[in-house]
Image (cartoon, rainbow, N blue to C red; front, side):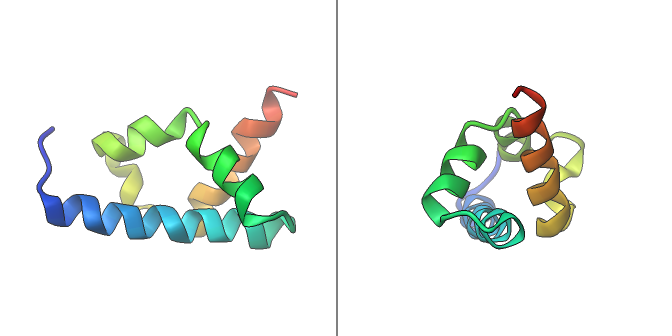
Length: 73
């Protein structure tokens, strides 16, 4: 799916809010939250707009990303 610059700008702002939510919900640093987020298998799906994941709330996505990151442990 091809997206325009506005879509990417909005998505980047959403990513920042998801990272902040991960940090706040799990009492970790923003750096740790960024590491979890940018290594998440959900990131490419969010970027591509798969299943309209980008429409989900930041809280929901933060919890899903956290859950996936800790399933591997």
